[in-house]
Length: 278
Image (cartoon, rainbow, N blue to C red; front, side, top):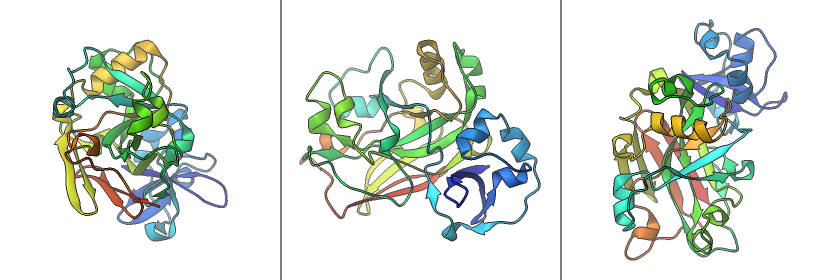
């Protein structure tokens, strides 16, 4: 399944996306509910997969929100593609490096993002994120995929001058709109093997990044297991798994985002996430 959260006169609503139409997930389940996070927290994903489809709205008429607009946690993984570590002349980490973003950073597919006034060096980072499906604590790698609801596209927009001004990366990761996400969450069964997900990024039509999750230093099951030993992961938590080689800050000459740019993150399995720089 492909699942979205969209805005409505009843507030954020979880929807099933199929053939260019959106079906209200909660109506298929008999009523109630809100966003996709509510659906995951209620443990009703499998029930929804078996529900009969009813009336639908055309996707073009539905204002999409990020797939999970209200996560408890947004976690970013740094230096997790082998080729990205090489281009930055950095040793691959011995343990996953992670940082946090916050809800102010989330924007949906098609959003226009204003660059922060405090930075002159904002970079793109196309990523695949997984969305936690049920509470996870001290999960083994062998069972980790059972705790993932699905995957979505993510752009970890990063103000490099702020990011590297201190030993902690977060100052460059948290500006408003710095986490474009979407358009949909694709469930694990539809997305396919966790180590064969494609990811690419085009800037103004030029291919800048392209790889697959086979190049991850720490696989998705490893990330679930490791993070769940450090904190309890909750339904709807979003974990961006890292970016491949080709970021603007590693190029010669450097490539920084500017007003009018269009950034498209794409995946054969997960669709297209488009962001305009305001």
